[in-house]
Image 1 (cartoon, rainbow, N blue to C red):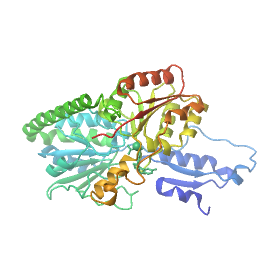
Image 2: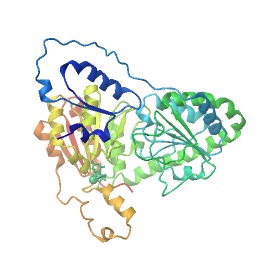
Image 3: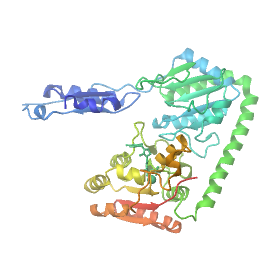
Image 4: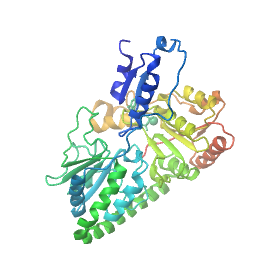
Length: 440
Ligand SMILES: Cc1ncc(C[n+]2csc(CCOP(=O)(O)OP(=O)(O)O)c2C)c(N)n1
Ligand SMILES: [Mg+2]
């Protein structure tokens, strides 16, 4: 290849090729400091064989590194005051986020500001969980009704806060952005309106904003209290719907994702780490602690989940780590390699396959784009269905793990309990292949 790093350049913050041994310390320190500075992201370093094989008489390095990464920062004070005034005085404000939950400090700060000023929080196609699902100010995953009604929108760490083809804010709505890089300069194009852009870490930014809102909010207390009541009622209705749905589907065959999620909620707790690339329904899990649910990344990402689960387990070997994968995603993971690594490195993870025998997301997207197209008339949409029944549970056995297939909803809990015992007590990795339906 002329330029090996070029292959990854679009997806990393920094790349480099080691040129000689003298550089090793500087290059590693540079890489670590770049990836750990906000906004955090990966780097790619290539190590040519010729350089690696040159003899060096001696080598020393300073540890910890002499280059400290830069941390989360505070927003510009003038803009902060203006943002605080807009949000505090708004009739119908909303917070929309996608990946703010990656920062551990965000959840407590977001809960605090949302509670104090009755701000609904929408997590749109979220990659992390920033707001506990049972919190009264959690307003679901659909921004559309909120964007339509809003006179102020605070977008936090979110490249795409709504889909302009479906909804747009009104002319006089103020749109505020908060992120370490609120221009999202790593993306070639982004054209959402920005009346104010606060460049800061979302944790510190939200804490500062909550303080700055105190004074201007005094003139709007009645509306804030009224909103709190309305949002709390709306949220309660949402929770009732979750419970109703679960009742309705818990005995269904094929097994419904809500039932799988509920059962996963029973064998896990707030400290369990979930790597997710499936139809896992997070509202049935415990979500009161930050950075525990890691969804697929921004660069499409399916097939990353087993690597994430292995990494989480490596960081904390006694923690319960569960990977949830669609059947298509499980295949993307190269599971034979992932199970080998789990066995070789003693990383007993639990993998749950949501096996609906298709690429439902692709099928659904095709139907949304072309509701009357050729594909919609086919009994089985071309290239979206898996026609061979796959016994995914067998895959883990070749590396000494335990696998089980579940088709009966009554067997969901017992199967997960056996798998839980396998990974946590016997330290054997496990796969539970659940023959499942699509959420509706
Ligand atoms: C690496 C990668 N390739 C392709 C896609 C496009 N894509 C999005 S969803 C999907 C299907 C996933 O199928 P599965 O994991 O079985 O989940 P389901 O939609 O059936 O719930 C594909 C191919 C992607 N997101 N990432
Ligand atoms: Mg599938």
